[in-house]
Length: 150
Image (cartoon, rainbow, N blue to C red; front, side, top):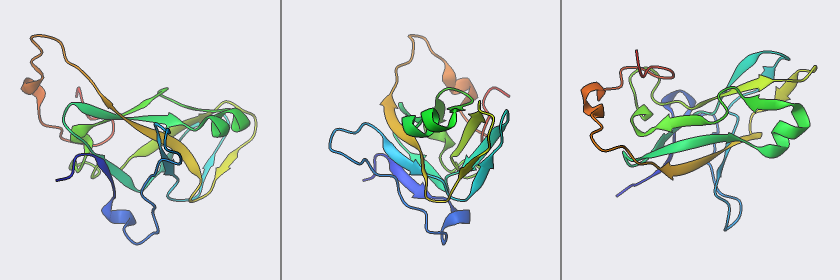
């Protein structure tokens, strides 16, 4: 029985996408790589495709964090600080749960990300809900990125 992990989305099945791995025994994060070459222009938000989707129990999320070396060396950040991939994002009808990383370039120079560059880390995290939470009233995700709350 599968509990949590990564899969390649259908559109990237034959494009050499690697499943994220932890690099050391005590690493919290799974290294996520770029699925294709992308240019991140100065002062702009750019989405970098990963070719991946993630599955997990209903009470967990996948936190997406920029790799510190990429951030420091290139003046990049994630536009939303931490990306949150909810359990119901997996296989959603809007985009199959494709994880896209949203970078902002604070620098003066463009940053070129190459296919296979390690760009982020994914950390699976358990979360808790409040007493009396009635989230079942909006229980069906109907789209991809940015679709909740519509």
